[in-house]
Image 1 (cartoon, one colour):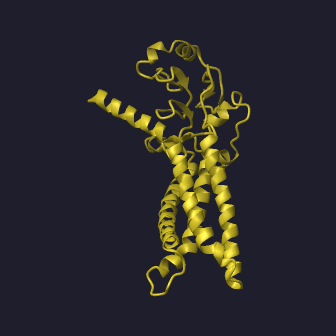
Image 2 (cartoon, helix red, strand yellow; image 1 turned 30 degrees about the vertical axis):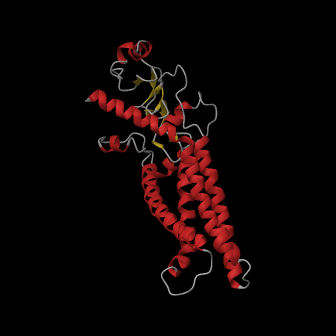
Image 3 (cartoon, helix red, strand yellow; image 1 turned 120 degrees about the horizontal axis):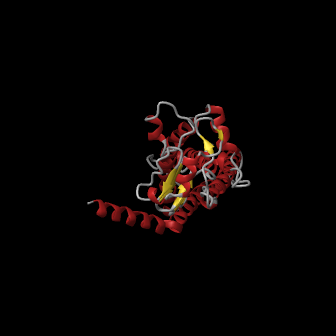
Length: 290
């Protein structure tokens, strides 16, 4: 049974790898349908009406294009930014008790230099370090192996099929921005198309071709669904950031009497906001503990 389960999980991870460009194309298709409904079918033609209708349409279109540009920028930043990998020949030199760099003891050093015995269990016998059996290397604290990406990810939160990438230390900021701008954009579209949606159920004759009306109806339903779901997801991640926790670590935090990485809400948010990929090897500890 255990072998069968492992095989099923492997096939599932392989399938997720295969999604790749399909998910990106799906996101772009949703954006394209939304653009067609808002700009070409409804508020673009409204610019020619004159008076207050023109001003309202202009305001909606300007805000729509700004949020769309920010949404696409943050989305592709998550897609193409490496979430963070473990440098080759990495050695642990961070003391969790004192919260500062400290040399390893002789026993720590020996366990690092002789990890073969640990490969069978993935445990070095030292709580300060862990060994990844799949990557055949030591992995830092808060680092987890992603079966879809096939490597260890620094401060891994989760593997997101929508962005075809892991969400980790180096792209988590962009992921939060993507959620934020997606919520604002979908909310704007939902509110701007609400009068048109209500008109579907009234006796008033609605101008436009059947395909345009159907696209408007579909766009309203899609954006309403995305707006509500992204809102819940965004609230969850804001809660995680406030406690300096990832989705994977949420369970560990509940079972721990004191979460050592919680520096206070203000500093926790500041770490996500200002994290940058500078000199990676010299600043690795900053990424591990942010």
